[in-house]
Length: 480
Image (tube, rainbow, N blue to C red; front, side, top):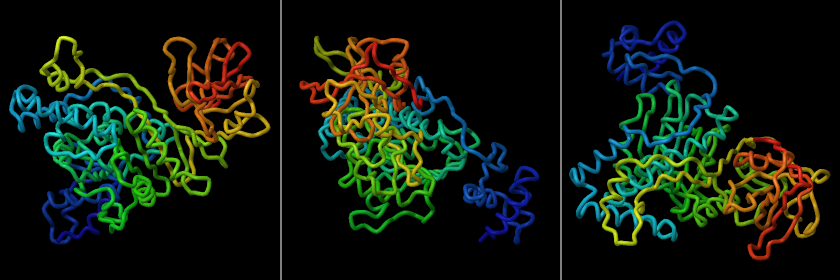
């Protein structure tokens, strides 16, 4: 057995002198182990030593400091991952996997998964279902994770060494997106929890990641891995995670609140739980329900983004259907093939098996109290949305988080907003844009705006408050 402590000590001595060569270190370790054994030991210790492996097989220190903003804006699903998925499809069904009986099975699997997911039914993944899931969902989920991580990178909260837990990793969309989001000089200790047949697809796709993205797939349920529901935790070690990802999985858990709370307990003090879900009403609102159950005025957990609690003593109780929208991806070849081979009637439209919309609800939770922007509302400057009933037909000032893109059909611009106190849905309705209120349109999703002199009205048809923004209203961007 190799003397690991000697390898570590020599690596620490050389790290600031020159690249760490396993052959050189082997000469200073008792028994002169083979350089390949030293190299593998360095790989296993690399995360704790903050070392990254170079293409030539030597090692060098990971630069200090947070990762830079990568300018994440993918336009297409990367070819190397698309080829890997198609390799699996060919291995399973042959070169014409998208045609005949296999194509019909895959299309039926996609239809069944979509139906079960949207209706809240139990979702089961056999081999065919896992491959169908990959064809339909992999590209959009790949893109989504980067847009969510942008909120953390904005404040320098992702380090170049990351220990990551991906709960319900599926076929690997979030994992591949994370890999491509991070810089080449990052080192990741990645752990996936995936009990279904999707794990086999995930394993193959993870082969496409770099040598410093060290992966372990645990074939356990989230409950057994984290130790909820009477289970004893199966996690391999007590090392805390810097990032725990719940990518489109909360709606599939029997007790998502308990699982998220257990994940928070496994975080480093400055770590983050990142959860996202499809933008459809039920799953998006379900995610928000979990967030609100975990983040309370008496808990030690804070919502970092996007639904900031601007009144720290309040809890929102509106419907919470809020989601972000990014640019569509190009249609990947495997989706086009499956869709074009489908049998259609004269009135059937193509596109049933194409999914390139990047629309997602998300929440980032942190135990250290950090928020994306440290902005608070005060009673002496603005009204609480919780008190809107008392202000109907009055003009008021509001501090609000913009929680949608324009929801109108081309008439008056309409934006969902919240301040953390609202008990029913609130919208800002711009009936006349001016130079003094155009910040409302320009503000991004999750931005904080101050609305001066907005007119509060009750919309009986929608059961919501509309705050009219007109030529008497000023909107200022407080935090982008």
